[in-house]
Length: 315
Ligand code: TUI
Image 1: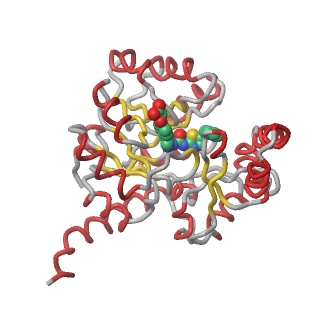
Image 2: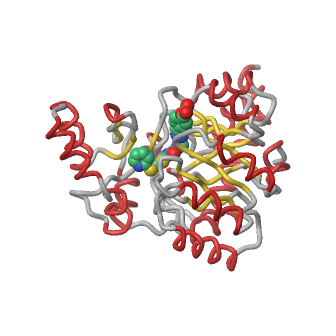
């Protein structure tokens, strides 16, 4: 399937693997890139040396294009931004903010830039600042989210920009991918579906919870702090909601203490009680672990088939 995104990135399938802090490391990113999508190493708030290592390990597995993500709330975003240049990363995505101050340096280094946006206003600013594409992410997605859902966000961003748009948030199969193309997107970004991949190195508990999830298994916490996060409804998420409801200085302080490092507890330790298991709403559709290659091939084939034969439904 050829789109402006496969052309821009030099990849086979118009599917970008979403950056997920602590989760999207070299095994996952390299597997996705090797199979013909765009694998992304998540910078998160990890130390620069750790991310440099992850990039180099991924490069040992594949010489296909590789992406990295800068999470703009991270205290070491400046250092990770420079690391991407030093390590000659082909594509950068950004999340949770406006990457404007880095864009000139990244463009000078020849890096393709695809900021995640959650509004038309930021999308327009990114185009003016020289972005190669934007990723319009709806709040169906996991982790840090904006306010709009994918269905209204994507077409409004498509209409406002001339550069290609990648749809994200709630996409894990061919139907969502076909729908994204009908909204005007040229590619999709998927995170949650790769939690249920063989190559994703998260705790068994995390995978088990994703596979057991139903349509109503996720919840959004963190709204009062201005950083809403979608995750599975586990004891930690319930505790966050309670403390937010209390909304006192003491409860918010306890909240901050409880959530610090909680994603890592989910990813690495499978700590059900204290972990934050970030996930999108589409987890409810995932029932089995699959290799990344099957995910990419299956989604694309299903989307192609749906788009090719759509007219038959209305004859
Ligand atoms: O960044 C993500 N997803 C993430 S980051 C993360 S780590 C984290 N942990 C706790 C609190 C916060 C972050 C986990 N998941 N996705 C990309 C994304 N970016 N989604 C939405 C946005 C976004 C939202 C508002 C981007 C820009 C924005 O506005 C910025 C502005 O200045 O207008």
